[in-house]
Image 1 (cartoon, rainbow, N blue to C red):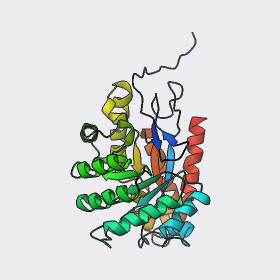
Image 2 (image 1 turned 90 degrees about the vertical axis):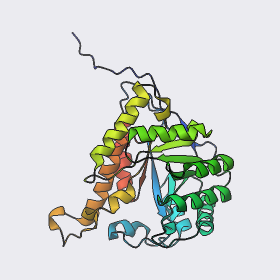
Image 3 (image 1 turned 45 degrees about the vertical axis):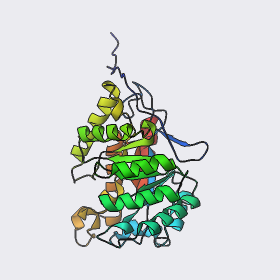
Image 4 (image 1 turned 45 degrees about the horizontal axis):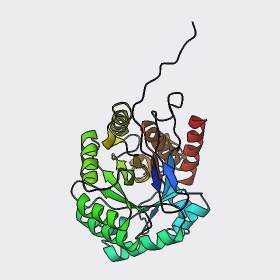
Length: 314
């Protein structure tokens, strides 16, 4: 008797989402099976990698992360252009670190103008990511939505404490939103319900379940993402059928294991390879959990993950 691989009967599907305002748009989502279970269903759009750019000079990055961008770190426009032209970035994520009230506390007008300049300088979709300070993100993301009208930015994070005003601006100026919740499937679903009740289109929402790097609770993140995907595909939960985005780069590169030098921790091996591998492995784990977009930093780590995606999809 021939062996038959047991297969799951999926009754749901992930919504296909169009990123950016270009024609043709970049598409994500559309899966009818668990991640890379191509023997059971289809993944019409493979996961995408976004390269992050900071709106101010980073001051606490390890040398391995600084080296590929050292000639553009002080200019987010040139940084974004380098990511697209030299490293082939399909999506740019502008991290609005300068707006943090505990840091430079840059004003909303100035930050939004930076976002506009970056959006004008590249021909790929742009994510604009705040600092998770509810009040400041509300100011910055609303102003950014206004000055970048029609660019179909992906704005986030939107949390339960500030989603109303940001979502209203996103609707009015035709942008997408990132619904961010603290590692809990029920909270993720609830925020999606609140957004759709405001008439945010389901195809304009990405889920940010909150993620971490390997060694800092990624098992729990994986479990929550896995449960979100299971509910979406096998339980037909329409409020969890949006694509998932994972902001993993800054979580990886702030880990102490990445910042320790080879002299300080010779048992951990070469510090450059260590950081690259930790980022690549963390991103890969999150893709296997259901991530549709992962935000990454180092070009070498990105190349490793792209190769893995190709192997798994082959």
